[in-house]
Image 1: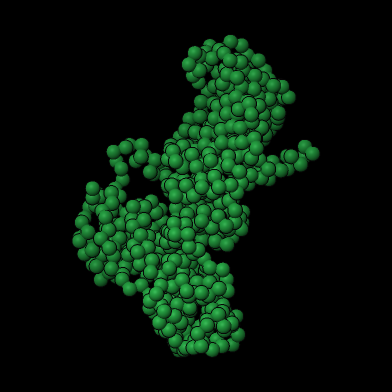
Image 2: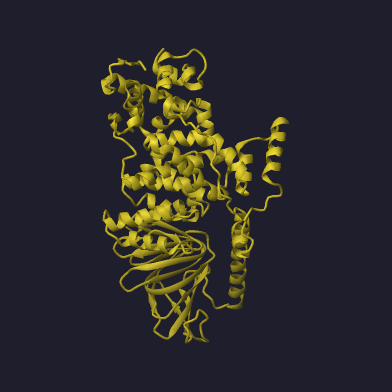
Length: 212
Length: 367
């Protein structure tokens, strides 16, 4: 049963485009409010805007091959509950929490540890496609990032893997720009130390420089 | 340029913005990791979900609005206050001050209903005295001038204190229905397994002979406490209490049967046992947004390892406030936990902390 919208999704899309052209509100909150009214088109827009963030969060916790499916599962979990979100401006942090929660559930189902102990960088759990030498290096770097503390791991993956900027990470996850900046900086320092301590076994790495 | 200087002043533009002078090391990492990047940003075909307000139920419509609920609660409190005034005017003999409480004894109805039979006799209960109803009697007690208690058959209570700012009884066993219009924290009930503190203003408390009990709140909220172990029970919720372990997890009574059973199992299973872990997993899986009440309490009752999962689940239901951190919550920082509680919008925890300070002072005075 369709929700009680005063206008259909196509009309809504038109309105949003018009608003954007007029420099009016085209914020996530607009899409969230529409999604709360049952508009799946608006929810699709939110997917386009947030899928990369969700992908990054999951990549820090579960195996790469499983991430794409889980991204969709996060949004499918969020869809029926979006109406319960009281503060629409916190959609990003709310979605991030769902993603982290799903990763925990997934871990319980698969009995694979989502968090790795510090100082362990083992790429062997990566899928077969990373057996090629250059891919192996990448997998090893990723494993090193995943061995970092939560806050650093997540922020670094969003920056280095997903290509998001610091301000974008802050805006999407709901963290303060200052926290993101500190996490990036300290996370990067810890990553350098791990790489420099020879935890990356490939000869292409020397001191604190990686040759990809 | 030191690392700290960079961190504080922001001389890391490429890492931060992806712009400015590129750092070769970071560029190489980006290139190496690019293959893990999300490739498809095209949304799947989402199912159409009925998100419209459920107008078929007038109750759901009413309760879906926080403001309507607040207005209703305020109206009920006002009504209770007016009724109390009327009752006190009509009963000039009702006790004022600290010279014991008036007790009206009546025969119980056959159906054991709340409306007691015709008053049989009136007595006064003095401080230190106990009062007990038998199988066929009920009683109404005027709690000084701040409220009323109704005792069901087979209930025994003792009057411990009746001073300005503090009224305190002990419920040894049986069931009492409480209506209080005093400021939060003034009326306190000791039970064998916990202390119940009225935070305004209507609830039912039952205590078994073995010391276990149950508290159900109708209006306002009630705090349950023993040795620093605390549970908050808002209107519509209940919590058991156990002679062995003190207050259990509170839960909303409209929760699923499975969730409710898991709460009970968690409360009664041995700490660290498989049953307790299983119950905890069921709660995390079955929790609805409204069950954030239970999950908030669960945070401080599980091991540090399990707390992470509870944190994640609760965060998904209600994001933690900006003035909290994950690390702080995981180490059970009280200020942060209190802040998160207030975000649940179930009652201002400041009232409880105020009572707690006064209570500690009161106990210290007694020693």
